[in-house]
Image (cartoon, rainbow, N blue to C red; front, side, top):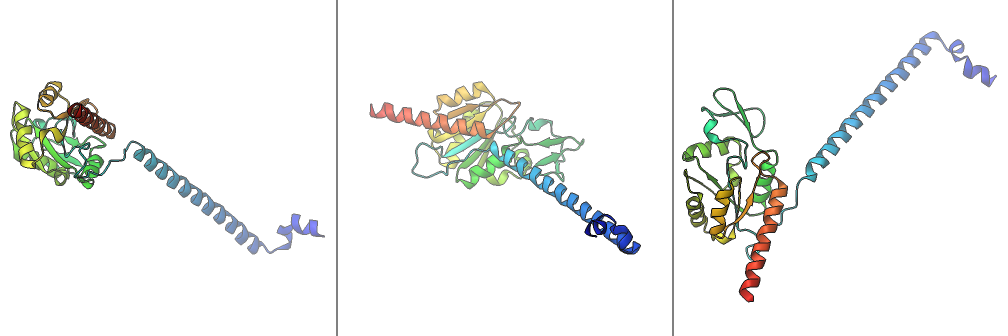
Length: 237
């Protein structure tokens, strides 16, 4: 009867066939689990990528005739792009197998702040001029460090000199042919920022523990636009 055929198939089919059939079922089950695991891994990676992109802000492309966007963005290097002072790095310096990482003579590892590589690349691709300032008097070290970090290609110019950064900014402005009032500057030193404001440079104060982020970038663009708007209104009033 049909019920006997279904319930007692082991007695009807040869033992060799039973073994092959069970092996096939086991293999199929194993393959299903592997496909499921691969799917979970892919989903995890995809979600991680989405989460990583959530912190990124859309950068408006620089247009030559837009006075409400900075013509040049300048960063103090130490504690803004990376969480250390270059003086502590002991040469020779070399890259490691990790992207944007440097190793010095005594084996210490140095990294950029997490969002910095993407920020610099985005700004460069959106036609913004970039500059860097540093209290370190060794311009060769600055060039070496930025080269090993693979970010030197994004910068138009660096200025380095211990002491007053206003002189550095003035030289940078002249070299880049960008008026001081069209520059947006990021630093962790409040006194330096106050000096820059006296030169009509728009400034943003950063926390040295966290470095430059997309949120700071958005804040800087907002402050720059507000400054330009207020200046325009006072001129036309």
